[in-house]
Length: 223
Length: 279
Image (cartoon, rainbow over all chains, first blue to last red; front, side):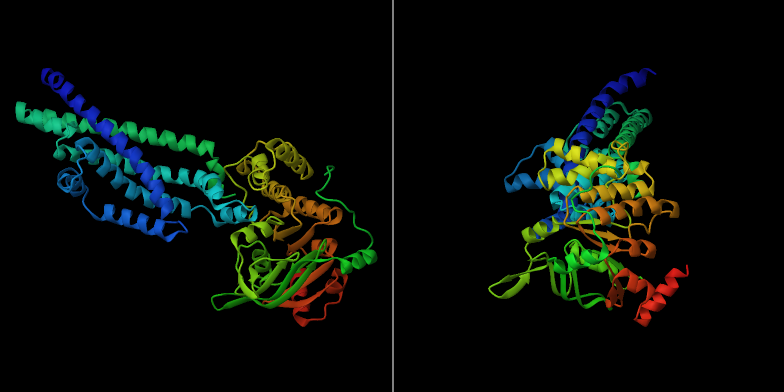
């Protein structure tokens, strides 16, 4: 018990950094996911090309290497980002690339009749996207988004390799210092799991409240 | 169904009505319109005219192209060739220095504003209340003030018997109620031309009557031009000025309902009606 109480405070400090990184990169990821997911379905080919390039590059390369590139390589090309920013950028762009596919899939899953009714009522394409399509699609996005958000939380452990003192980094330095390997890594697992649980419940709550707001019962009935 | 239907005039007896229609301007004109889906030709050089105020029932076997006529008019399906006019205005093309060009977006939007459509599967917006389904297009497309759009929306929903469902969501309604909301939604845009695409085909049999009742009222009490694709032959006979039997991408036979239903000339019409009416 004594070891636990002395190990916990430094680990919690790390957990806080992890949580902040996860949160910031998730927000960035959500923005990128919508931008690229909608971009892939755009009428304008430059928007489509840009979105496809972004998604394929970030899905097709290692997140760790992306992080190294942003933190170690980019400064040599004259742009220094700082470890926190580089970490958030790599994580956010990565989860955004996967999220773009979710956004695109959910938009395509909105029944064709909804688009046809929108044409018949002469809605503009923009109006149709924001008021008819996205409110229905966003509910469908929530379960796969939930997976991505938890995946992203776990991926934050990689930032320990670009010098950030996140939970994993703290665990490692604590182990080097105390050699209490088993309690340290067990505690670390528990802390990651606790954060993942919070995220899972958060996403489920978000899904339910969105579903209520946009009348998803109706969407499911495909009225 | 006490509130006032969209626009004016009551129908007179058949002879004077036929007279009036003969003098009316055309509302819809198809000239040699072609459309194929892959190897399936659904419109073969179709020539077809509908007069302003006319109620036309389009009948025929499935896959004969009936629905495609409506979808071409609603700009949901682009024809492969030929010309379509709504009123005097071309729908899918424009002529620039004597050359035929595709219609501009502005032109499509302008012509589309004159047309309303009711779909087989209702296509209500599930994320909007009943009232919002009806008011959204007048407000955001036509720029009608919200208060005015809501007043009119309530009036139309009263007319279709759903004045007590303003705040309900589509998922809470029966099929017949959904379709009545869809009719009110289309009427809210005050179209000159209404397209009805098998609007009772997806309904349980006991709900068909409530929807047909509203269509009857619209047909008899408004001057809207109505194009009705339907399998309800009794209804087609009641409401239409003209019945068009469509087969294999062209008009096989057309005429007043009394003629088409009691004395069809084309053998295809005869066998189709025989098959349908025996059911």
